[in-house]
Image 1 (tube, rainbow, N blue to C red):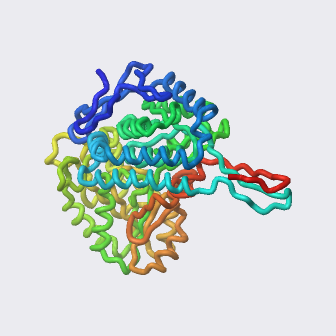
Image 2: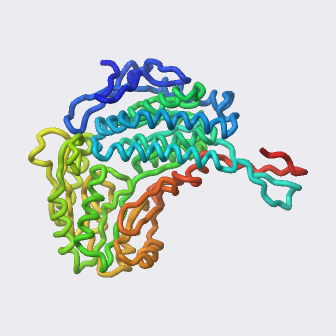
Image 3: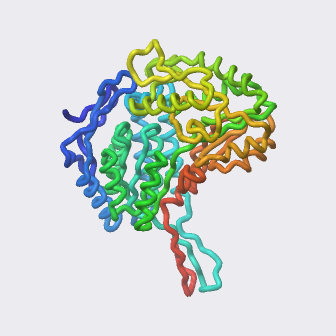
Length: 492
């Protein structure tokens, strides 16, 4: 077997890794097959990096940071090169959209907008970094003049998940590059093609050798990368289980890490929000990316007396959802990303049947005899202590939890190991704000799942460490040096 692309994607060297500015055969001699969630057929293959490839990538990034030009360029010089990266990515929007649909089963109707938004995010991150003041004079009693200098953290291992592979990796690379860091991209083995296109964009833009490297491997090789002492920082988006391992490894050597992990976010319904509005909003939300969103609103906390009314309305909406192949423009709910994810979701549904009332869904669609499809699923009378309420399912499964009053609703929302997102469903903005202030979560919106990637995104508790997006995201790629001078200096 050799590396090859899905239809409509034109990565030039899928069978190679990119290390130190060169496309080279993987040391392992193996390839990772890319399987379509729609057809269960192999649609592509890329090089499988092993431990030797990881070491080579770290060595290249280390040399490029310690001795190369990139960290020593002016921010303006890096910015001009990054503008060329943006232009290249924009020119390959169609490929990026097709890659996402082919690998992850994302809806073709949704893919162009998602790709455009991700490229815009890359460019916005570039602009934030280009306008940041990296040397700031501060008042001090310790010297005649003091300066805070913001310097690149060093070699960054950027590890992206399979659900939003392009936008998440592009954001990590943008933050690293504009601040002067060097990067090892480690995409998910299920969705590596976007990282290949980013690598080709860096190559075309003239990024110096070793500044950006690409190695795609399975869990063992990825763990080996994280353990490499040449890595100064790990930027990881993925499961909480993997995040705990990364945090422990980084803690051993006090390496920096940013972790954007799982969620079990709650939406609280107030009495002024109708059952019909709730049904439409929550059905659209749980169908987004087939429920495979870390910030997904997967717990719906409702007044006990309204539970049946709301459950019936949501079930009616869920039963209207068109389930189908990702390339069908009328499809509203596509497949789960892989077989193991389908089996995981089904196992939670079976667990839910033991502890709650299944209202609708829970089965594979009868009209589809291939692919990793599951119906949108609704449970009611869910105990917040149960597995389906406490553990991240990562599928189109919604749990209704009845409560007696708003105080209990807030307590239930906070009774979770996670704290990534949330929502308050109400017409009253002041009430939404007041309730939201009491929810321990990194982000929360009135009436729906809302995210602006120009603002900080991240979570409380086991939903992660640190933030991505905007100036707060940029800071995670910088170290702060306090400098004390006997006289003011030209600090430009």
